[in-house]
Length: 173
Ligand code: NI
Image (cartoon, rainbow, N blue to C red; front, top):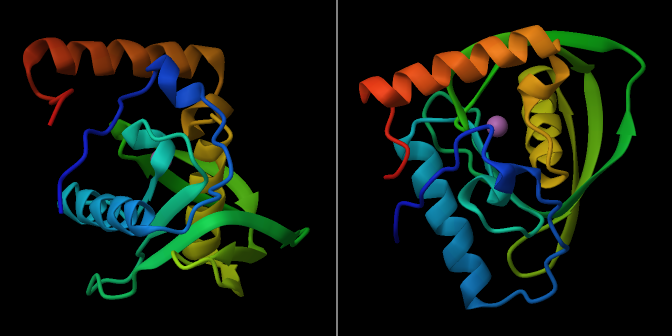
């Protein structure tokens, strides 16, 4: 297994729209395992392939405290969203140390494949629903801060640049 380099916003590669996964082979299983290791090491609760510069519809998520509930979502689709909304203070491994409130659907139903290509569905609410919606946005080239006002976005860019200049953030792992 290997730790992968996480792109930092506003890297233009984060805007890439991911393509569907077609081959359920050893390469895919290794990529998913490397992404999980990278997520746990960061540490984070979700990581999309887009963030490690692989533009395929693959996401890993683990919101458990014990870090023992890994979900691998290949070609995930949200097939239902509640009208009810949920506001959560989100963060992102591609926007280090920045948190802000984002409104999303409170409950969703998700259809995905596992690394072998088997389809499965699950219901998610609260934090898990937030996390799935956040990661699926990455696959469409969207980062959570892009829901914020242009002023907030430019302030975040300035903060990140300063941190990188000071050496507080590693841009390459
Ligand atoms: Ni993110």
